[in-house]
Amino acid sequence: MMSAILELHAITCHYRGHTAVHELNLHVNKGDLFCLLGPSGCGKTTVLRAIAGFEPISQGKILLRGETISSPAFTLPPEKRRIGMVFQDYALFPHMNVCANVSFGLQDQPAKKRRQIADAMLEIVGLAGYGQRYIHELSGGQQQRVALARALAPKPELILLDEPFSNLDIEMREHLSQEVRQILKSQGATGILVTHDQLEAFAVGDQIGVMNQGHILQKDSAYNLYHSPKNPFVADFIGQGVFLHGKLRSPDTVETELGIIVGDRAYDWPVDTPVKLLLRPDDLVRDANGHLTGKVINKAFKGAEIMYTLQLASGIEVLSLFPSHYDHAVGDTVKLRLAPDHMVIFRTNEA
Image (cartoon, rainbow, N blue to C red):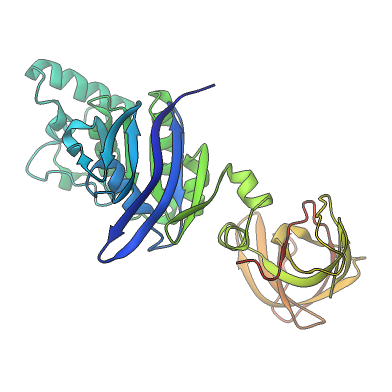
């Protein structure tokens, strides 16, 4: 069994007079990349800052390699935690060249050694030969790589990344998130990424914790968060979809306005329990012989696929992904069939 390099035991943090994080538990094993994902104000950045030592905790404790680094009575200073951090704005020094920025945390090393480490880090992040340039001469993506190289240079126990791609355009964010994962994995680094963007979390994280209102609601793989959400918030926040109201007719059967749906999961609630069924875009499939009819009221081209918003005969609106060569116009009518590979339902009174 792998031992945790980082442990958070029921930590509570207050921010500007309110409880930002409430009795949160977390452990991260060595070499893992973990993502805290959630909407603005959910407490994820407060958790990161508490781990870094920038925010006190009012309850619980934080351990790094089994040693307490934060408790209500004690906070080890950030500079003594052996934790690297990549900030949202990169926090690079404009008056220093790239090499000096990368080696900034190596002041206890001889100058020659600092230069060797900086050059090695720049090669790892794909910026070999950039050491003498200044920050204003670099693109946003290159600055992000410099910030990552600086965080890795002292060989910290843990790397923290606070919304590191938020200042980049969408295409660059997608590319760099995958690249950052490869770099961190190649170095055997343990990392925690904070983001509100689920695609970034999917690209980087081995495990993802979905946060809301100071709690981690579900810690899981991207696949399980999408296909097996444990509560309606996670189901709604991850991916896209709509909820259909219905009633449970048997452990694996739900009656909805779209008809009887038999799934691959059994629920032990009483017959006729009011439920809502999660319908993902890939649960509705284009089928010329399908028994459902939908009117196109919106469409979004996504390259290989088109996301259609369809209004069914009952008036409800659903989402469906079609191969992009099926290019229907707004107002067109299309035939569909239900193909829910994983039936996910919740009682209607669940939060």
